[in-house]
Image (cartoon, rainbow, N blue to C red; front, side, top):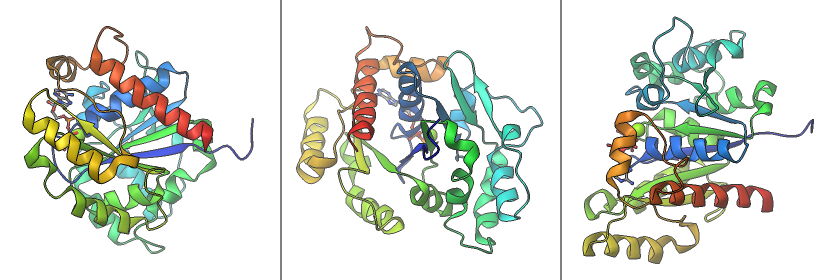
Length: 263
Ligand SMILES: Nc1ncnc2c1ncn2[C@@H]1O[C@H](COP(=O)(O)OP(=O)(O)OP(=O)(O)O)[C@@H](O)[C@H]1O
Ligand SMILES: [Mg+2]
């Protein structure tokens, strides 16, 4: 095995709620697994939607909140305790519970640097076996997000192709970039337009996204009822070649793999 191999960490973020962060995290991760990549998903949202989607039920073992707590406390970490596996999707994941809501307070008392706790967690040699680590963020810009952005190789921002959620995207992007000033626009900061509809207002937002962020824009994901069903039934769409959302997410997966192979 290549001693220098390290996982590509992708953080999926947006301060707005309901803009398909979790839907994108799960479909991109499942798509990467279909391309035979070894993937770890990390849920840092106390709403626990990603964990629920992956079938997590409380099992008494530690979750992401304890991982943060033990790292800040500089306790030894037994990584296997934190990782669960979803057999059907062939994905490993670190689940969240509502207890994660207190993580910001824990991060704030870190004695080394409150913004690099996740960097320390994921630079451990234990994670070298993964090709990709995907972090699904909560809808905020709090210290969890600062940590996730700082430790990531790729910042993927889901932007809903709709006028109201689109408002303030530029300001939010500037805030996120301040968390990682070394980021290269178009290479490690990418915009994924989501829920694109065949109506004038949605098309206008998509045009505005291309005009503002052309170089950074991934292939858009269309709005379809199949996604609502997949969220409710906890399935993924990338496995369905007949579904255009599934095909759209696979295009994104191939861009991400291509970018990594070229980079
Ligand atoms: N392409 C799509 N077409 C139709 N509905 C979609 C699409 N993508 C996501 N949705 C729906 O939008 C809702 C919000 O999606 P999701 O939970 O992924 O957003 P989120 O950004 O993770 O939300 P939160 O900020 O609360 O974590 C869900 O009901 C989901 O099924
Ligand atoms: Mg979510």
